[in-house]
Length: 151
Image 1 (tube, one colour):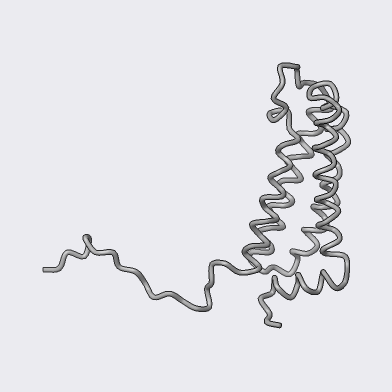
Image 2 (tube, helix red, strand yellow; image 1 turned 90 degrees about the vertical axis):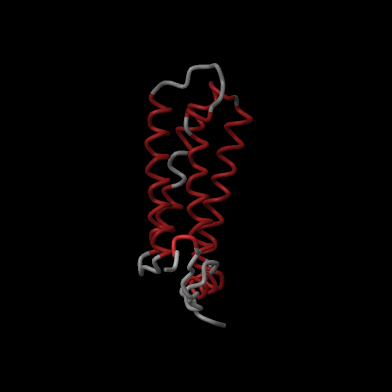
């Protein structure tokens, strides 16, 4: 009688199912960038000063919507959906929305330098995402990699 529970049985590896692909890497990178918007919430303010008020509430709602948008876009890339490009572009454009109320709210809580740093990082990030998908040569290269086509 064989004790199959004591043996590690591994299925055959499939060559067509690579774990590290351009599409997977792009989806993870986009998801991680989207989650960086959580830095703009009052939970990350990290000061003893109050983080209350309309500006913080509006910022947090817009941040949650932005994170959801980038998460959906990353899922679209991972699943190779036909709509992933529109979702990424829409999320990057919408990603500018939480920056204004954050700037207003964060001035009092964390100071102008930290607020400016958070706004600058995300403004540059959104701009880079838009450049990557709106500049024709870069868009073609990214689309080509995301679809898994060979050069």
